Length: 62
Image (cartoon, rainbow, N blue to C red):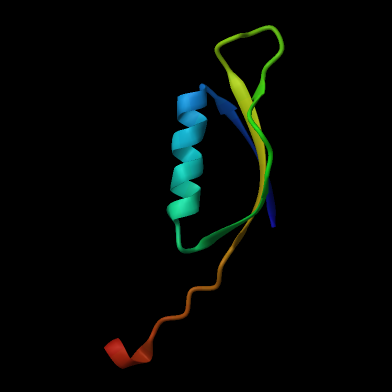
C-alpha cells in the first residue's frame, strides 16, 4: 500500500485522479476531499491510499 499526497491546482489533481482511476493495475483504497493549502489560494492537496493489482498474463494469447 502507498499513501500519496497530491499537491497542485484543482485541475491537475483531478486529472491525475482520473489517471489513477483508469489504470487497471492500481486500486484506490481511500481518497480524501480536496483541501486548500494554507497561505496560497491557487494550490490544493488531496490524500489517497492506493495499492497495485497483480497483473496476470493470459497464456492462451501467446
